[in-house]
Length: 437
Image (tube, rainbow, N blue to C red):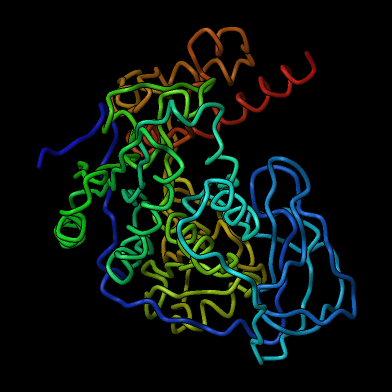
């Protein structure tokens, strides 16, 4: 099996040994859950319950607020206390449905349809169950599975790269429920008559690759691809290039290259939605880092406080300097644990040393090390200089809008420059200017 990859990228210490061998354990969410209405790309969901209503686990509590939006369901049974703004992991305050958990976990029962399923039923089930991309973007999956021309799709890629350091939730899903992921892929393939399925796994997971290859040997439309272990191998653009050698840019969607790309856990939840009409109400969260006493993988109901998640992992060690929601390359720093787990919460990481804050930033050395590893082939330092000078025209001419904000330039910079942050700020300025016309 050849090892597929792209040009550029880095291979930081991945820290996966801390949690990869710890089986997933379900946890209870506590006495109260706070479920935000905005935990996906697009319009916030619109509440369909009021204070005082009793709800069941899996019951629809907020419906999609537009074409690009997603339904939201209760992760517990109990009573709606109120709807108010609460902090979410990115530091914003969003309207959230606060539910008092009665700890009965009485579940909503939905009608299911037996095979064979129509394409319309598959897409509607995914929409009804609020499935979104669980690799980080949280794009509504029913929209992704409805491209302009389904006959133009010839690849359905299951993104199992999991290239972010420390995170092992997808690895555990593939280790513990590989058959369900394969069934989810087979369901998606029913939507695209001309497509083949590819489960793409980094080659630092040989046990998963071997098992998936065995399980799919009699599946003519499915193959397993081995990817080179490096970051950002799991980026949509670069996993598509590694497998198909097709390129996409910021003005394109994967469907424009004939591809649909879905994260492992997304595909697993497509299976649950279509076969059992199980709404998306929980996900696996990796709790790791050298600041966590017992790194682990937990299946966490949405709305559960991060504080409770940390307690389930044995608590934090003393002198933790940095806490992240997500991975160390693209995750977001957290200043409080009093925020709920949401659909995009792939990991909670705690570190005893905040290396970035302790690093000394110096002038750019013009060494080109940022450009050497940029997966988009950009001259990152020049983009940062254009951003610092507020040179929007120069920034655009140097293709700054193609930056995927992966952080490889920061990682490889000997001067410890905050290149990604500068480029991200300028990208937002350009986007704002374009919206104004």
